[in-house]
Length: 618
Ligand SMILES: [Ca+2]
Ligand SMILES: [Ca+2]
Image (cartoon, rainbow, N blue to C red):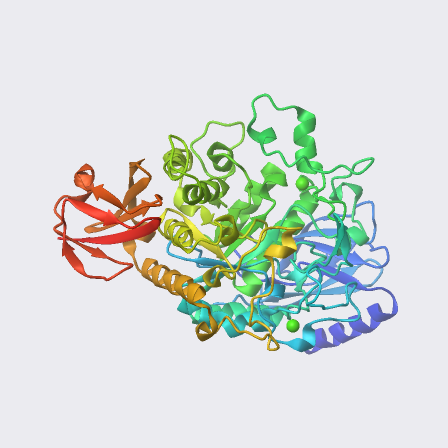
């Protein structure tokens, strides 16, 4: 090993004088199921393409130099007997690259465990949640060097340390899983979107796929967050962006090849129409613009049909899963990506991590369109292999259910109708279901800040099929419309900053309405965590009548009856229609109210605008 250490220090001296060489992935591991790896080597000068590796545990299978000679793509195969340590790549001009293979983390069994319908996902925008480390708020060497909480479009200083400090608060209210907006470096200046100059505080303008943004913390801090979460029995989902990168991304500043990006003669934005993929009458140009058009001018669109670009993203996603110990992925802008690439990356992830969960943001307005992007039962021109989608159709249905009067196709009927189309999905339980997120109006505002509607909507979210997701602050009634834009629904969590005048992480400081919401949230979320009927049970729904929706969740001999009354008046519910699900039970226990067992009568009296849940008892 001694001579290797000597080599390494020698190399550093050489390259500080001549050129800086970087390699991606920055390191890899021994013992991965796929022994093949493509190293993308980048230098500030032309790279000599004659390369050898001095250790027989690694074989070079091919070398590709693109038109930009600052790059070299080296395909290698790592032998099963390869040891951990540094491997030396020698180039024809005598320059040298050390590549490290590490030992895989095997210390705890709950790595890459996947996220299921028994989980509750809590979406956090780290910059806006809690500031645990004031010293990392701003850096003068970054293109956006200001942190300013008075500016809704600037960075506010929230970070990983803040999230770690609040894990127990979240666990207490039944949260099992965190999904954070992207954690990787966004070294971008402020960019104009509409009338406003925005910071990349949301994380979707990635400029380096291998470094956590230092305003959020370090790679080690992120690793530690996952470790601490796992120790508490919680899980972490990372947000991925396959479709685009920030205009200052390291591969855009020095482009490996023209075809790395989807390039147009003049700026071409995407048309945002998912119909082009499934529409039997679609035109070629519409599809080309959907896949290759740019999301906005400062987010270059990756050409994921380019095998080198595809491999860069696939290997980075595996690298991140391994490096940080992630349990799943939420994939941004899923419907804008090359379809073959999407299936390829899912297969590669599943091969290494069979339990890993991934769901995609295919923002669609119909069940067939959503199901198209997941494993489905549809005969279409392309078969996607995604586990589940972020369920926008059910989101619309729940919001209409609590907001619209009952009708033949309106109000709560929308939930019934939407679920009846689940035959299109192979496993609708893998969909991520939600009431709002960082791209939508906050649902408490949508429902007119009505606490009864809040409980109905949350009741539906926590008991319908799928993996429920809430947006940070839902438990304390954070509200707002996207007016004038997204920033209005991405406000700081009150109390996340020590200087805040009120701390809403402390339930003693909540208003009576907030406390009512917080308690309802915690009670139902903690109940569902261990409820087999709710998490893995079967659903049976009955046609809504007179504004009342009844469905049953059953697992073996356990049965739960859910009743949603969307009427503005108290209503009587005759039970004889539900005999097929109630047969053999003699009592009911009102889970959310008194928890008392009452003999089953012929009817229930259901409060106006309410969500009710009864455990049936023999
Ligand atoms: Ca900070
Ligand atoms: Ca695209």
